[in-house]
Length: 199
Image 1 (cartoon, helix red, strand yellow):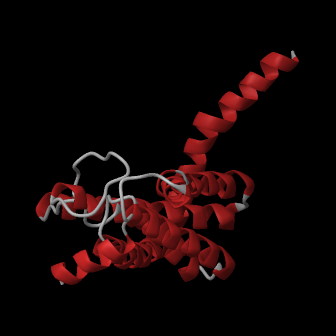
Image 2 (image 1 turned 90 degrees about the vertical axis):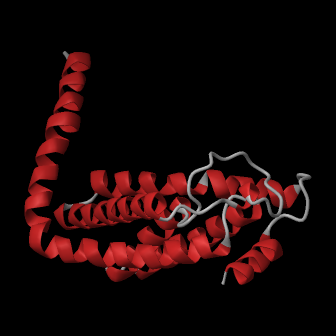
Image 3 (image 1 turned 90 degrees about the horizontal axis):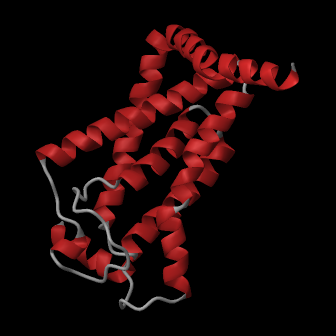
């Protein structure tokens, strides 16, 4: 499997260290696209009704679960990134954290897969396509192997499934608590600030 993984990596990875249009596109996809996830999560929480905010909590829980499991995998079975072996071409610098699974891929795939589990098919397809782009880009710039992305997708599926199961038990109470925290630390300070400007 390791040999196949490396062969696939070399097929996708940049063919040289020189930058061109493709490298620039890959850089943006590898570094920037992931920020759409927290932006979307904040948007649906602030603009949505209670049912939407509960789904936002499920999505957030899935991300947390996935990242915690990813951290544990990295601590127990650390794997090297391509440029540390070394193999291929690395177009960006990256700290030498464990390669498997890809956290960028994990965040994108967890969000897309959980959206699908919540029956938001259009969101799932759009975010899933963006996730595949991020996965390609992270391999292209030389910081991940294809297997890192496959692992991220599988872990994202598990994280989404666990988050939905946890919501069935704790969802209502978690939403009440989250609403109290949001009101205390966001809405009240905003109302206080608005009163100062209008008084």
